[in-house]
Structures are given as structure tokens and as C-alpha cells.
Image (cartoon, rainbow, N blue to C red; front, side, top):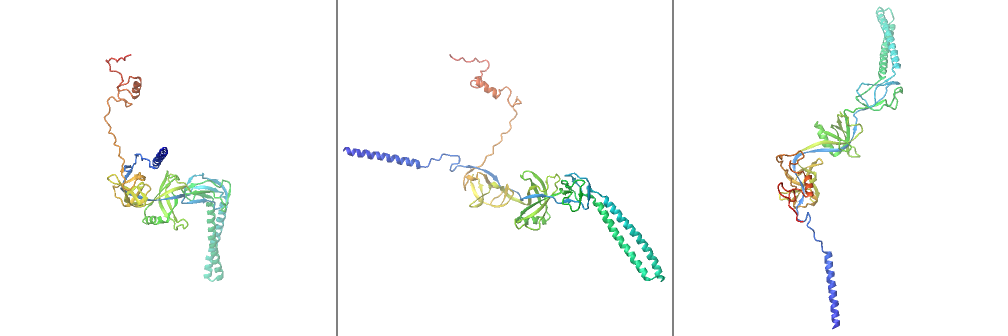
Amino acid sequence: MKRLRTLLGIGFGLAIVAGAGWYISQSSTAPPARPAGRFAAGAAVPVGVATATRGDIPIVLRALGTVTPIQTVNVKTQITGQLVDVYFKEGQMVKQGDLLAQVDPRPYDVALQQVIGQQQRDEALLKNAQADLERYRKLVAQDSIARQQYDTQVSLVRQYEAALVVDQAQVDAARLNVAYTRIVAPLTGKIGLRMVDKGNYVTMGDANSICVIIQVQPISVLFTIPEDSLPLVRKRLKTGENLEVRVLDRSQKVDLGVGRLDTTDNVIDLTTGTVKLRAIFDNTDESLFPNQFVNVRLLADTVKDAVVVPVAAIQRGQPGTFVYLAKADDSVEIRVVELGATDGEKVAIRKGLQVGDQVVVDGVDRLRDGARIRKPTPTPRAPAGPPVANARPDGQTQGAPADGQRRRQQANGDGGGAGGPNPPGRPTPQTNQ
């Protein structure tokens, strides 16, 4: 009997241990109770919405470009001699025909006088030969001289006439050399740094030019676009339209100028699949500097009267390209759309939406088809009331204590209201000691 009670006690203890183990295991594996959060199942998700409107979408081609002068000239001497004077300053704007430098003209003046003298000598010889020819003509008619003598005189006159042609060419060449001693600006532009100083001996074979002049007004920008965009640009150019080109600085924050597209290159670069374009800018403020790196925005076309929504509303997933359409019952619906042109912030919708439809632009990561949403409620602005009588300049009403004064009174126990100062004429209550 004693042994039976012992066995029953052991079994009862084992049962208790097994029950406790089962309870602990069930408690550890059971999922924790989900607290009632802000976005619990079935709760409305706060979102931001935008309304589809009708507007224009500009088709802008973005590219990288380099400011390039339309004309660049290395100014060199065309004769040999000493550079006796320099009349320009570095960085100066010059006009076409302005005197830049002077080569010593004295040797060329002497050479000019020499060929002029030779010309005058040959003119005198020609006149004498012509006079003899006239006399020989009369004598030949009278059969007083041989015909051969007359023919010889005719040939001599022709020689002197040819000599005068050569003399005139030499005079012109000498005068041209004298003109070359004055080095003038071949175009209107800006001069760079001076490369040859006054007093140097200059020749036509010098490696260094005297200076470099570049045309900065107007100036051009060279940039490239993909060959796929070329047909649209060429179509607009053939119709004679002026395509607007806007350039920005390296940070794309400063607008440097607005110009027009001038022309395209005649070949496509096979290695990159791009084509070069040139845009012209007036550059009256000289904001564009030669060889400057710029960001180019070419307005290739404009889509008119398109259904437009913000780019933030466009989603991509298993259905394709879609938006979350906000319905009147505060729920959303996945609406597949077909996109058109975009300008970076807005996108045109070719199919799927109508003007007036509302789409979700903020909070889309917590949405699914049919989810309930809560649209933002605009806060009404309180209407301005009538002016308060006896108002003080600091906004306080006369006769009423300021906020700081009320706090000090309440801290001292004599503030208004409960525990405030007693009205005049009423006794102060006594406290029983």
C-alpha cells in the first residue's frame, strides 16, 4: 500500500512537470499580440494626391557642351622686320581694322621708291620708241627705209610696254609690303595675351604669333545629341523654325544665356552614335567664355494640350506602368497608363487618365489595390476679426496684465481668478491659526 502511494505521487509530479513544459512551449511559440498601430489592417492610409490637368509638355534634349568661338585668328606678320611699336592691350576688345602693331617701314619705303623710279624710266623709253615708230611708219610709206627697220621698231615698242606692266606689278607689291608694316585686326573680337614684345625681329616663319583674337559676340556652343533624336531636330530646322537653346553652368543652377540652334554636323560619329550641333548666342554680357563647359537644354518640340500628372505618381510593377487612382469612396485603384513626353517634373498621359482624376503622389509604398486612404484636409484660415478696442502696440489689451505679469502674480499667490487679488472693498479672509 505504501508502495502504491509512492508510485501515485511520482506520477502526479511527472504530470505537473509535463503540463508546465507544455504551457511554456505554447507561450514561447505563440505570436505576440499585434498592438493597435497607426496603420493597422483596415485603417485608412494618409496619402498625398494630385489632380490630372491639361497642359503643355516641352520636349527638352539635355546634353553637355563646350563654348567655342565662331572665329579664332592668330595674328602674324606678313613681312620681315623689327617690331617698332605695339598698340593693343592684353584682353582688349578691338574692331576690325584697328591698328595692333607696327613693323619698321623704312626698308619697304625705299624699295617702293626704287621700283617707282624704274617704272618712270621705262615710261620715258616707251614714249621715245613710240615717236620713232611713228616716223618710221611715214618713211616706210615713202619707201625711204627698209621694211625690216620698221618691224624692229614695232617690236621695241612692245617690249617697253611689257616692261611697264612688270614695273606696275613691282610697284603694287612694294606698296603692299608697306601696307603690311601696319598690322591691323582682321576681325572684331577680344585679344588674348601678347606673345611678342616690342623690339623683336619678326618673320613670316615665326612659330609664335603676335597675339590671338577670338570672336566672342556672338559666340557658339558645340554639343552632341543621340542620333535617335536627330530626325526631330532636322524636321524642325527644315521648316525654318528657331529652336531655343538654353545653357547652364556646371552646377546647373546659373542660367548663362539663351540662344538658337544654328546647324548640325554632316556626319554621325560611329563610335558614339551621336551628332554635333552648333548653337549661337549673342553673349552681350560675356557670360560665355571660350572653352567653358556648360549644360545644354535644347527645346526640340512641345506637346500641346496633354493630360499631365506629376512624375511622382508613376509606378512600375507587375501590371506595367500604372498609377494609384484615388476614388470618391476614399479607396485606391490600380490604373495602367501609357506615358508620353516628360519634362522631368511632369509627364503626359496618352491613355488611362482623364482631366480631373486624382492620383496618389505620396505614401504609395503602403498602398495596394482597393486600400482605403485618407486625403489631406486643407486647414481653413481663421477670418480676421475686428480690431480690439484699447489695443496696445505690443498686441496686449490695455487694462489687462501682460503674460509675464500674470505669471509673477500667480507665483506670489496674488494672481487673478482662483487665488487672485480680492476686488476692492472686500475683506481679506483670515486663516485660522
